Image (cartoon, rainbow over all chains, first blue to last red):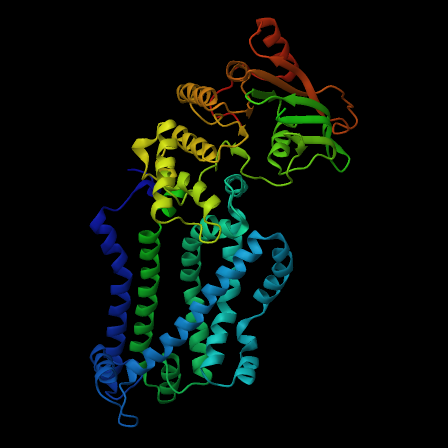
Length: 272
Length: 263
């Protein structure tokens, strides 16, 4: 008998083990839901899988009686637009400010304290300020996401730039590179994969801020819908929406990871 | 004279690293520099690079003050991190041309690019890397990475080539190949080389002139009160074993350190 830390599950067993907790949770839910529905078929708290699927299907394919829109897709489009704008602006800010702060001593000394201070402010605490300043429209929601994740991305990019071996920058200078060309050919390409990594890690927070702002003031969006139907204890809508959001989040994470592997084949190898 | 030092000092606050350095180096010399750790060899190299300025005295490159930052007239190869990890071997060398010629885009196109590419290919052939053009640095062995770094540095035809323990991390066999390569390039391209090494034998074998850096004056109460100086300046060729012993005793350097012990 080997020590426990030296025992490795075979390939398929490993997969099955990974699925096991999901299966158990699902089973527990189905059992609990069945027990509750047996007592009262109209109980809204633990809807059956069939009821959830039916609701989800209706939201995805049948126009709403009130607005005539396909609710799920309107919500998804609205939320993803906000998310994309917020994350996109944060990435761009992160790249520009991170490089300025990490590479150039003068701008570094100017920007670093500010970045550190801003990163300390809890973003949700400034949400009221954003709503007052930018109104309850799209802008405030996008700005909240930027406020929430841009400082993190900036600091990550800055750190990556500062980690670049001095030798590389000296070498570039002995090959005749100007500051601009070093940014373009040495710093940017090496920071890009790290930017994608940082964005990946920031996505969870971005979703948090998106849903928080939608919960407070919106007329459509995934977060808005969940908080709207909460009033009717409509778990048959809320649960599928949560699964849908999780699925989207998982997909973006996967896409960013694959993009990093395809676009920057040297990145993984360098970290050996 | 390509490099001239007149009474050069380097101090950090009250700590003296180098003191009273006087040196004249002619074009085409292969100067090897040895000394114990912390005796200012690397500081000396950084002054030649322009990364550090002398605190006192005159440091001249071809009679003019040494520029205050690194530039294409002084090439360099470090022990590691000398090549760009995100570029393949060919692009690593080609980028030297692109830095110099495409001031805004950093990239060359069309006929200019083809000519630059030809030049880069010739350089890679000179260091024996023709078979690895498309490989990224992490796919190359340590010796091949250093060959690439040398090819890169030579693209600019630098007036002086600075080598900072370039072979310190390599296995002995590979190191011998690299010695042959660097001597060959030095002869054929009439380079002026400054090379810092930990390996006294390497210093004697490669150079035309060996400099030993060491502290002459010691104050046990204040170890940093006095800096290092050039204690031997020997035209290589008259190596007597006694001299080798003497230098070894003085600097505490092993004659042939184990591979990978540099730093």
